[in-house]
Image (cartoon, rainbow, N blue to C red):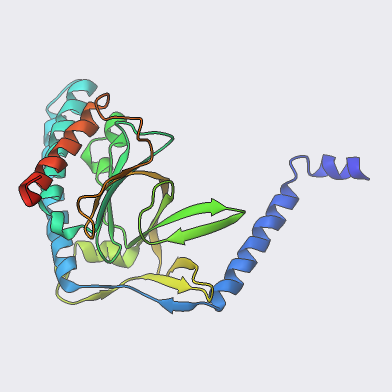
Amino acid sequence: MTGKSSEQDPMGMSAVLAFLDQQKRERQAKLEQSEQSRDIIPAQELKNLAEIRRKIREYKKIDRLNRESLSTNLQKKLTSQETILRVFKYLFDNLDTWQYIFTSGDSGIYDDDSFYFVTKSGVSLRVKLASLEEDNGLDHSVQPFMDKIFYNKWSGGKKERIEKPKLGFTVEEYLTEKFYALQDSPDAGSTDHQSEIIRYTAPDGSLDFSPASKVWHHHNGHEVNYILWDKNNPHHEETLFPEQTTKDFPMRNKILQMFYSKMEEEYGE
């Protein structure tokens, strides 16, 4: 009897599916007991983001034209690296827009980690340096603004979700079609915008998130490994791998030196 069952389901998929179905039902039951809320993205923040997106489109156009004029992949990669450094300088020059700046990566700190720029309302911008290594240029490297970013960690078979970046937590982002369209709309910044991401706060204080409208993109990222900037604590940095330095990673080092120069300009240290 046991042998027949294992032959019919050699990978134990029925048990896995049953477990996933149970988790889904438990989550739904918890959501029904939770208090719902949504962030309000202020008009001024949206106006700033729309201007940043417009400027990024200009850099992307420059990058495409530069790459079209070059013949080798190495030349294209180098010109994209030069242009993306200009993007980083521009983003750091808009330091007041960001509540947090951090990087995420897989099992260490490397030159192809992603940089995240996050506003107070939780809107996020990801710069994916790995795309430059894959020779895709800025069109793939600089992502659109996402409605909401939050951070997850599994512990004891349960997922903890928080809204502030924390070392060792993985990144999750939602982008709805409505917010994607708003970014390029001439109306962006004319009024406040209610986020399309619903926050569920359970009686025990735990959080969950779910989109209220059609999702254009959903991204699960790597773990937060380095926190450069917290607007509430601007002189504090945190790293998940203190034994690693940036000296072996020239691209990352250039970006961080640019950030430190901005900090010195702003704070005199």
